[in-house]
Length: 122
Image 1 (cartoon, helix red, strand yellow):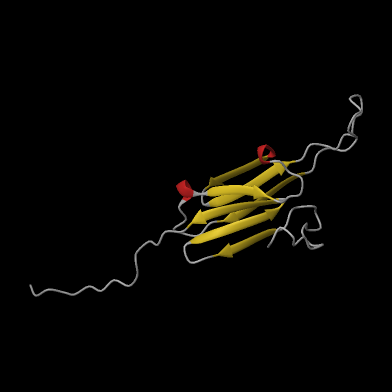
Image 2 (cartoon, rainbow, N blue to C red):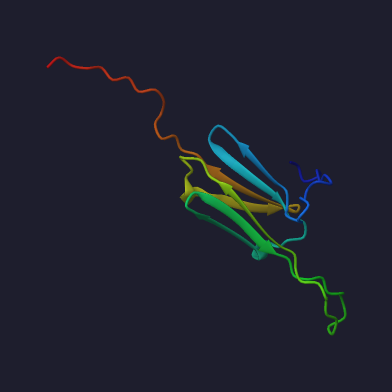
């Protein structure tokens, strides 16, 4: 999903941000569309092989009116994705850009490929 791509379905019917999960050869990329959310208002954690992205937007308050109060609470969300076996949790990175959070999870192979075992004579 590009930064210019903001389809009408970027939020599901409950107001949660749309999340794309893309599996590459050596990594997994999770992208969430969170317009106007600041990086410091975002929380990302992994527990029991589940990646959770959460955040809360401050309520909108009219600029220039220090006494103004918004009657609306901030928009909050939580989205979770189960990580595959081999996810290198210690090497996860996250970036924000153009209303998107992108989390990259390196995947390390449990073994390099097929293993051939040759029996020896006893």
